[in-house]
Length: 172
Image (cartoon, rainbow, N blue to C red; front, top):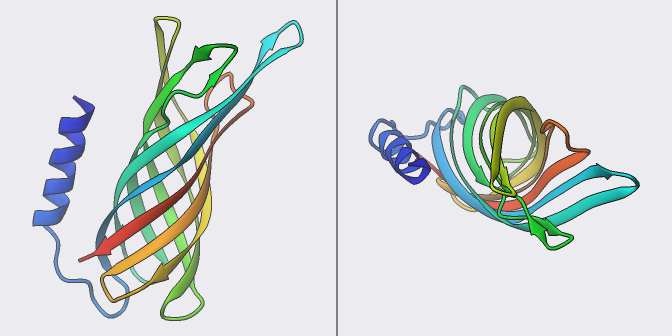
């Protein structure tokens, strides 16, 4: 079901977008891969600390060259420790601020909300919590770029939930 929602949202973004204006406004889509880490206290002095390969798909709209909004689906994989894997995924919506240093290079920060789901030991839990991120991007052409990013998620009952990723971006 999550794949269907992602495919439909991507198709709508692709079909409903005007050409990217020279002032930096417009729609974009992208995909990334990275490492998702999860740490929390198990009690009695034991800690869970695992990471796994992660991927994400994203879409967004830049209102101008400085401010935009972004929606991401993040699959955190199954971070594993003590022989136990924990499946983590979620939808993240953010307000993104960008500072363009040059026409090609920019830095950005974002704050938002993640609707997460965690599955472990045959038990599922979900919730909505604060998210944030920082990163930098490089525009290879007017429509194609790449970025690196660090994101933190305040997932309930975790000490740390974060994602380091590299993504490719296509602007319309």
